Every structure is written in C-alpha cells, then in structure tokens.
Length: 225
Image (cartoon, rainbow, N blue to C red; front, side, top):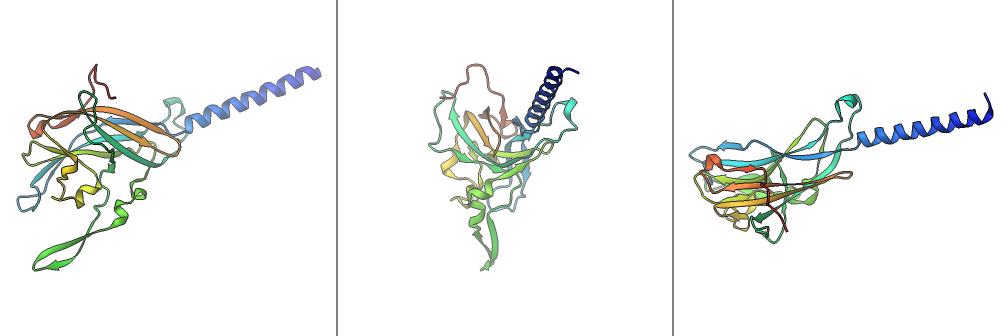
C-alpha cells in the first residue's frame, strides 16, 4: 500500500475514533426533564393537631435514558441536583420576591422529637436539614425523583408553596410567607446539577375544590417576565 494511502487510512481511523468517543460521551451525559406527576393525597387522621388531610402537588425530575439503540450505554448520574421554584401571577409578575428552595418528596422532616413537657411533645429543628447541602440529590437514569411544589390542607381555599422551612413556620406547615390565595398561577421549576440544567413551567390550579387542586400544562399565551 502506498505511503499516502497508509497515512490517509490512519488519519481517517483516528478521526472516526475521536468522533465515536465524542458521540458516546454526549450520550452518557445526564439529560434532565421535568414532568407533571400525580398529586400525593395524605390522611393524617382526625386527631392531628395541624391538619386532617393534605394534597401535595409534585413534579417528577428525570434523568432520561439514552435512545433505545444505545440503552446498553449507561448514562451518567445527574449529581448534586438542586431545585428552586418561582411562583407567578398569570400576568407574569412574581408572587413572592424570592425563589422557593425546592424540597425533594419523602426527604426527612427537619424536626426531631426530644421529649415531653406536661404531656406535650417537644420538637427541635435539626439545622442540617435546613442547610443548602441537604437540598442536593443525585438522580440516576431510570430513577426519577419527585419534587414538592405546593400543598393544600383540609378544605382550605388557600394553598402554600411547600419547602422544608414550612415545618418550622408559624403556624406550622401553613407558612404565611408562601400563602397562595384561591386563584390560578404559573410556576417555574429550575433544576441545576453539576453537568446539566433544566427549566419547566406549569399552571397551578387553585380556584377549585380540593380534589381538583392540581398542576397542569401551560396554555398558549402564558408568559413569564
């Protein structure tokens, strides 16, 4: 084989190898999506001091699997994922001045029972559960994580943005700082990881009976300033 053909074959082979490596690495990168999730209805019982029932609205954050042809290629985890949620009126103006730190569903409550005084339970807040580090999770391909957005208790007309700080609010759970009166709102969910980021917008429907309290897809014309 002439020398020029040998050199050309070597160059083409090297370029093909580099191209394949780039493609495979891109396929292995975490790719996030945020989707609607079913509401989580809880029944605490008639004897609960704060609420008897609650409906939690959630979204599902996924690290999408590779295309079917490349399912044999495992996707890297989206590491150190942290979320924030912003609430807007339908005209695109913010409801609250600050974003709400996201709380991953099922995460431990920040309160710990330390004893009883006069038959009443005494609870203290574990500051670690309120720290920024506690907000971070790793999301693996095929293992989505649910993120809390808002909650509505009993037959209340108001709902509340739901985050870890609500456990330590006054009154407990029903944080007046995050109160949303009856109405419809827009929410924006921002999720950031070490090697990925995603934003998604939804409607929050809170002008209905509690059983219809829900998140929904945005409508044409919905915009956020």
